[in-house]
Length: 428
Image 1 (tube, rainbow, N blue to C red):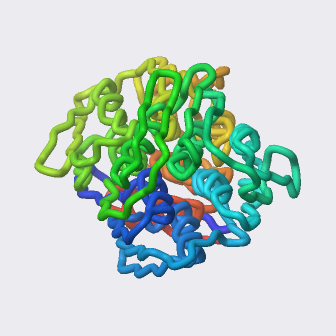
Image 2 (image 1 turned 180 degrees about the horizontal axis):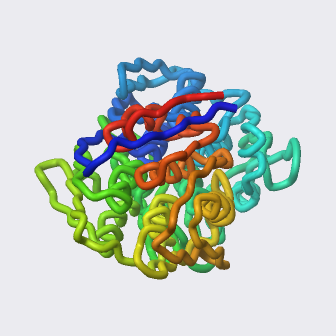
């Protein structure tokens, strides 16, 4: 097992950071381009494992692909096919999108991944595909990967999906819907969590020519054909949360390049949350700058994060520094992310002295924390690794095990964050 020991730079923070493109946006655009008629050029693709899974699938689908840096050109294939085996590694979003895409093809494909991905629930998506007429055969535990998928007698129509489990299931169905006979009407049973991700899916699909009508409890996707286009992936607010939250732990100023032009992500809420905690923000052209001076106290927050749940690890670390009790709610469903992002996160924060209570749908955090040295496990979760590393800004002796997990979304995280986190020393 590898680890990273962090020793921060003393003094106020003063850094300019470039974050990767949004993997959420990129994955949606890549799937649309794979299924589109005509060529596409997609730029701003992040160099993370999630997007690499989809890129490999496109390359194996018979489409000619040229890749230069963060840009890919995808040309039309004479015969579009789907890979016989898709190894999704640890990429939950990619595995769900590609599971749905596999039902558009006559051949049988096996969707699988590493042990941690096999543990993640997929039954609501599988049940929806079965209801549409697809063939879904379990090769292991029912409701989990690996599965064998083929077209069967799949067609469009109506399907019902729970809204309180994962918006990725709804997005996966939306992405294949234009190519189903008659399109698709997705009825959402109960409260929809992470609504902004469904809106993101609709927006990306629209750029490729699809027609989506999003109502309160129903998504209607008209039958049609994706059309290739030039598409630029905006910077990732989920990643930007980590440099911005660093200002809660240490005063100073941070600029994130290009972030002001990102407008599709629910995680943009990080700016408003941090303003409530006492930080100041301003837009400087395409960039967003946030700052905090030493005289400004860090305020606790009570906030429903159901629409920006990927921010929870970073915001939880911020709440540990606040002067009072913070309550994060609306996120019980993140127990089934890469880790149990409530229980596992609380366990690690307590190692460093934090007072964290796990609730049915969130966390209660009492601050300010009297930090102590700690060695953190990351539970196969890139966002836990990134969030926990921030504690090194106010406590020496912080070690993060398995730091390579950041390759899922930001492989160069520790290098890119060195102006904030300082030098990182890798060990065994």
